[in-house]
Length: 343
Image (cartoon, rainbow, N blue to C red; front, side, top):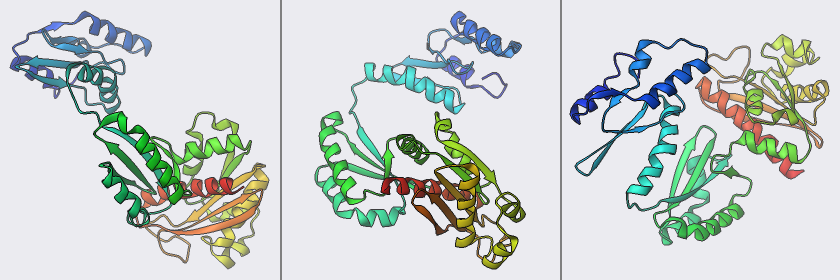
């Protein structure tokens, strides 16, 4: 790196007794990097192009700090920049190919199944016999939980020769928990929902209170979302549910702002105003305080209005505001996914 606390390069150069010299290709890359951004290049950036003479330079097309591969006494020492996406890029494009070329390694082959709708312990209980069948085949299973999701990673140290066996076991899993599987590998619920909307030539909009636009943001993160996402009404304050959606304040006061009745009206009125095939609504208590609701922190109602009618579902999450918003967003998208699968 360019700052004084970045000592790694100098320490490694001293340890391997390699003087720092100007590496012209790295200097040219740094000059181009700043020119493309119309930013001045400082002396400290030029210093980044001084690299140990004798190590293998690993190009960094994402930033200015080059990676370095040192080889001595049958051992490899690899130095990478700390910026995560730069480190990951160099590792994927420069280091992994060299490792495969230079070392004889056991190959771990794995597939990942993404599930949503059931917690880790309940999911493990549901698929226990299937998991036991993996053990008999000397296949591994890892549970990788995240807020609202559990990924199941099935692996083999015998490499791709177990591909067909793993695919067969995934098909068996599909028959056991068909509605819980949302995708595979790096699939997200927003990506899966987007594909379903495009396939059905359907549009969607959101009316959000407790998620404050997070649900709309998740939908539009997917490239091509303009083909199905129409827009969002942000009704965070109770009064806006009346002003923007036409829901009488007396109705909200009668049923409570966080309720089945209000979430249904939000979805139905939003669908009319946004002129969409589907509309999702969110109203809940994210915390840390209860606000103007009668329910406890973590209580959420999600409404869905679509071609086959409207319904709402109650969820009870925890007391962490950030996680509550994230899990509400995932749950809403999953309701839409299940609704389209049933149609």
